[in-house]
Length: 250
Ligand code: PGA
Picture 1: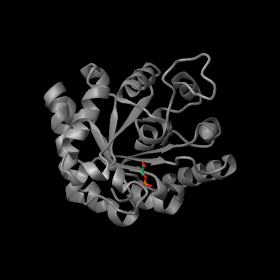
Picture 2 (picture 1 turned 180 degrees about the vertical axis):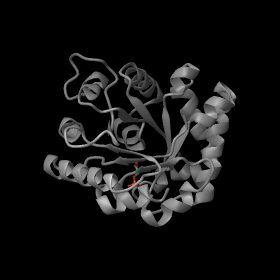
Picture 3 (picture 1 turned 135 degrees about the vertical axis):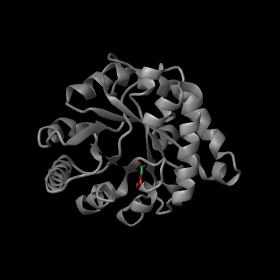
């Protein structure tokens, strides 16, 4: 079912002690409010098990990536079964930083999505154009292709388990947010692409998050758009008060 979701993406930040502290703070803050959305924190692999031990079921936990293999001789990699064994329920896949710096292609991401689903992890699958594609007007086609290539081999039932996150690369960590209108245009487009392949019901049930310099001051305006179902939050998720300021934008 389509839900409102605010998910934090801590990226490569916080030591274990800092991360556990932040998770405890978010957990406590959530207890005090009647949140109108699901709240998830996606944390570094090293923190997963410890964070799982200090949060309540009201706060979801996810990893920021998983391997494209189940197990074996892949030094330094962390598999979907390993992520699931910590108690995590979500995994971010296809983040632009993974695509850009670690060469993750649609082919690799397709495998990762399948492995995550096999472990009952909910993928938070990221898509989005770079600045040049925004400026040359190809951004809608670029995002369509990212979805088609990595996700359209899934059955409708499998697709229904995904969360999507539209993150224009030019807005990530830059302080430059897409306008609410730009976000809505893309989110409506994405829903149309999904409807074209899987039908309107699957499209209507899909949660599509916006990511890219989302903060308490702009979250409300973006979340009010009919096709925006929440946010994937980087920098502002590293501070409990600002993260909660986004959660309460709903
Ligand atoms: P940002 O990152 O909020 O720091 O722009 C968002 C993301 O990359 O998920």
